[in-house]
Amino acid sequence: MHVEMPAVPREALRAHGETQEADSAEVRDHVAITRARQLERTGRLNSALSGAVLERSCRLDADGLRLLDAACERLGLSARAYHRVLRLARTIADLDGATDIAPVHVGEAVGYRVLDRRSAEY
Image 1 (cartoon, rainbow, N blue to C red):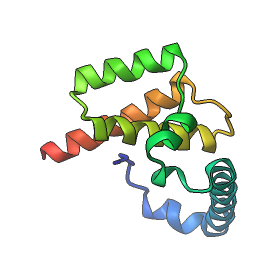
Image 2: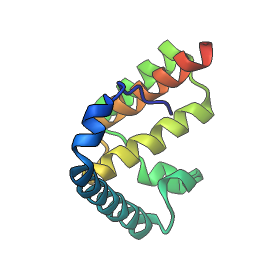
Image 3: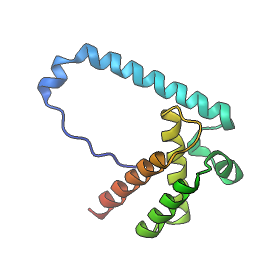
């Protein structure tokens, strides 16, 4: 997974040191809650899901399936890439506090896959 981020001006880095520490603590807490949610649901993190547990934990509604199928067709995703997108969509939904994976979560996960493919071309 690759994420493009704009450069942060040095002045902004210097001006917000205390705020950045507070923001980092909030993000750390949010991630810890998300990891606990994953462990509670399946006994493992989403990155370790496979087989029946992956299928059970990463069910998509009809719209999500159509979106993922279209992405697989357009991008030529392998079975391995398909499962990676499912795991990532589940993680995005978890970070969002959602019980179910919505099409928006699938779309975001596919978007990261597109960036990953573009960076591999360079």
